[in-house]
Image: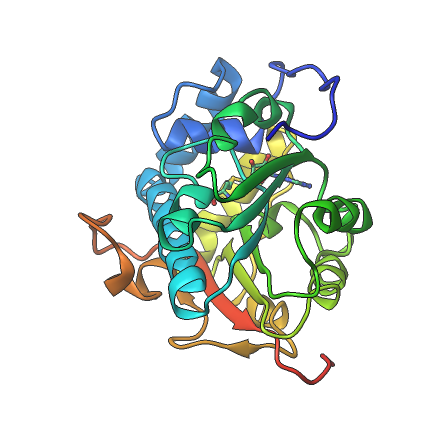
Length: 275
Ligand SMILES: C[S@@+](CC[C@H](N)C(=O)[O-])C[C@H]1O[C@@H](n2cnc3c(N)ncnc32)[C@H](O)[C@@H]1O
């Protein structure tokens, strides 16, 4: 399958980009000196930042396995995909459900440049990539309607994405409009940074990102829970990343005792309407 849309915008190496900083934390090669510089500043503040990035990736693995195997979901809309890092979401979903259909969405041109690696799925399944911004939910839903059957359940992954969107930009309304477009039985898979464990360090991290031109919003447990309004949050609830179904990890998982300052949760859309 080919990536949707052409003529990508140029890659701006004059300022850090979230996808590339995250790639640096994960030990990837698709980042630039500005990204590394911001990453190193964050590591000075929070020496466990790399572990948090790996822990977030591991949550994506576990939540995708859960969505496919436990919830029986066969369609995935992953917004804020990031630079390909194996295993990618479609590989995990198609390992359980070979004919799983996946639409990846990101707004960073570097992700589009590497999208080819995201599109090598199982022949029985479908993987597509769309360049779009989560602040344009209607554009995303239009693309999704071409790839997925929106009458059937979809796992909507917003993993380490919504902390780049402020309340003023409509973070809650954007998630609502995406969830509202999906049928009952769909699920919202979400992770997000929080200052609940160490407010001072998180505040300095937010300021460091802001100095690099990147908006970062840390949210409390109650503020993260608000994204799940009207959904049935599955056990164990909204918890720190490593606490979410650790038994679903395959092989060695990320180790460490320090708290991971990201909350994670999965909510299922019930048959009754939200709100
Ligand atoms: C920290 S990475 C997370 C990647 C992946 N979801 C994961 O958890 O491993 C955040 C991703 O969100 C993307 N992103 C940030 N703001 C976005 C926006 N407004 N619309 C779409 N994608 C966005 C970034 O380009 C980046 O790839």
